[in-house]
Image 1 (cartoon, one colour):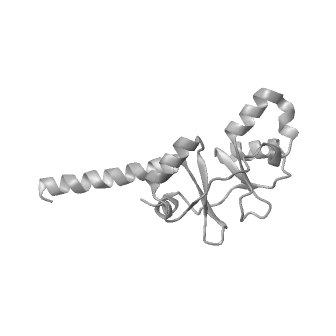
Image 2 (image 1 turned 60 degrees about the vertical axis):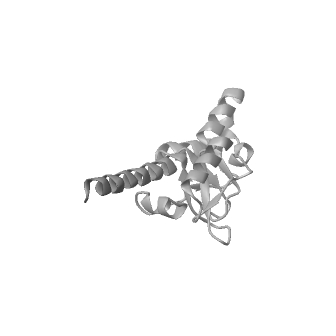
Image 3 (image 1 turned 60 degrees about the horizontal axis):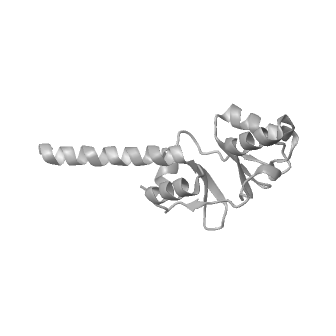
Amino acid sequence: MIVKQILAMKAGPEEIVTVRPDSTVGEAARLLSERRIGAVVVSSDGRRAEGILSERDIVRELGRSGPDVLDRKASELMTSKVMTCVCGDDALELLDRMTKGRFRHLPVLDDKGEMLGVVSIGDVVFGRLKELNAEKEALTGMIMGN
């Protein structure tokens, strides 16, 4: 399975949830909660990823600094070295990269470096499970003579 197929399986039209670098961490946290997602892309124009801000980033800094962190800028907490992928990348390779790198979200870029969507580790695992199930059904059908 490749990233393009994973994006196609996601429910509804893919909306890339972004915040501007000067948005507050509190605004980002509210958006994460409302959308029930684990990370937002930090972007000035909504097309190019400048960073990623995750629940984990916020909680880690909240534990260090206290509630005042919610008034800080998203750009101060974001991970600025953004790992990305492209539509042709293999799901197993993504799982390996995400697990080894200990990150859970990847913006998907086109050939111009603009975002097409975001895949989470949950999306990739779901896609892989669907793929394995289809293989199992095909093999079962072959064994049973269907």
